[in-house]
Image (cartoon, rainbow, N blue to C red; front, side):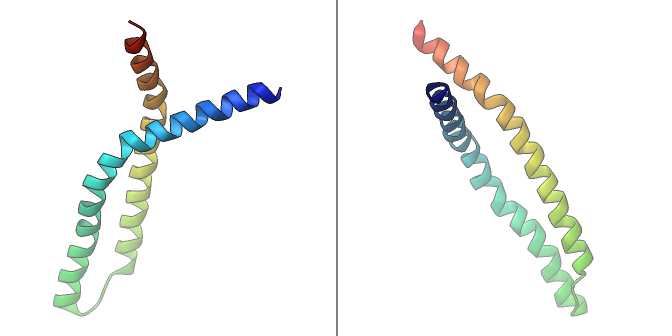
Length: 92
């Protein structure tokens, strides 16, 4: 039982490392623009009206969270397949 747990944990570790490798470039490129798109309208509203609609901020953050969860689920589904494809190419 201990050896199968070790093998499974090693597999999970490899999947998470590959997920981090594949997803990091997307996150690096797109998180900056998400922050800009959150803060720019707030800055304009504060400049014009001297107030911030915190309900809008909360709604936007919930939408970003939902988008992140969907993205993560897609990549979690895709990563083992990509690892398998890479393994098959190495065997040939």
